[in-house]
Length: 249
Image (cartoon, rainbow, N blue to C red; front, side):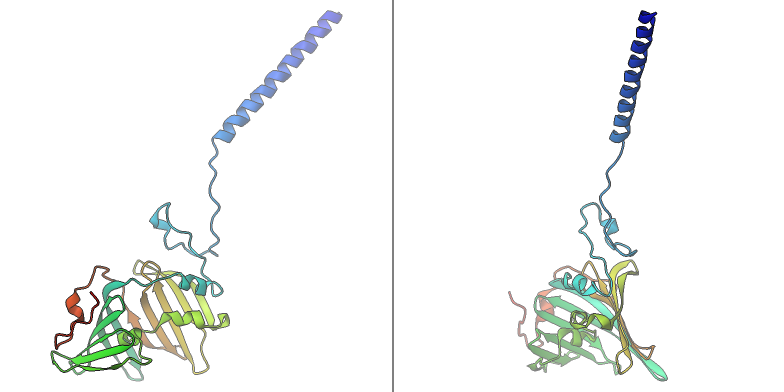
């Protein structure tokens, strides 16, 4: 009787050991099939503009009115590029537009703009000295650039002024796409004179892609430049009509 009881105890012990081993083995299999995913970056529900860039894409800063100045500060414009900028100005009862071809090489910026009277205004500036001539004339006017920046010559706002704004003057900031160009979008609050500024800055080039200026909610200025050529510009673009070569060799 005692022997039979011992056999039952032994059998029960063996069954228990087998069950423990089975559970351990099955847990091991489940653990080995799991994939550990990296923690998601906090983007406040915004779309990562470089999501299609692959696994080696850099971590993107989440853009909000509080962080957009940090994001803008990480951008850098290319040293060399060419592009066309279209500007439209709107006033009561009418509007007008013009296109400017821009060529940049290092510290030099050239603009070629067709004016409303049909003349073509050419400028070359390094931010210190500006050279101006019209059409194919050989007469060149030159003088200190003063406070007129290369962006002013392109008739576009200098978006880096965002860095100087108090945070409370930034009404909105996020990532947005314009014609498949990934941008940082910034909108300022209406200032005491009734003006609001909107910027779309390309995250890949650091260039201003589009901009709007509003007066009491009505658009009075628009600019757009959605494509850019990053190839090295011809050195001939920086030779004055009298043969003076400006581009550093």
